[in-house]
Length: 103
Image 1 (tube, helix red, strand yellow):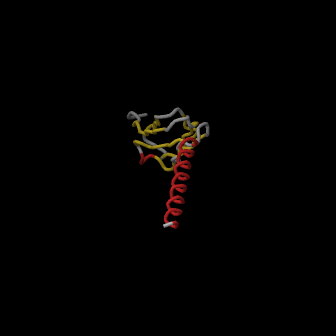
Image 2 (spheres, rainbow, N blue to C red):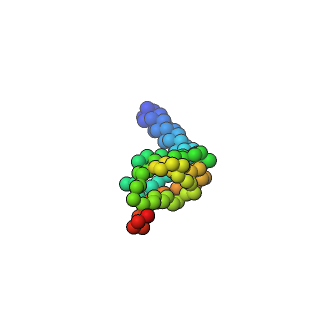
Image 3 (cartoon, rainbow, N blue to C red):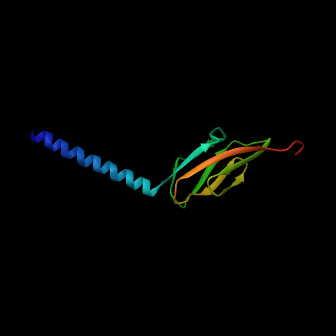
């Protein structure tokens, strides 16, 4: 009976440590989700700390203009979108707008 009690206490302590670790990670990092245009993204981190620069690698579009919404950022060169992680989760939306004929 004593072994079961010690095991139960150890499991409770372990569970509490896991919960604390999850809370700390959620406070230290914010989530990045691509909610549309996922096929246009080559690389994108899932988490970032607020204030850090985040780089998203995208498909280079030749026959249109690629737009990213959900966070303020900019293309530093074709296929490389950079933004500063805000202190909240980010939902990115990517879409391509076709160039008018003759452009």
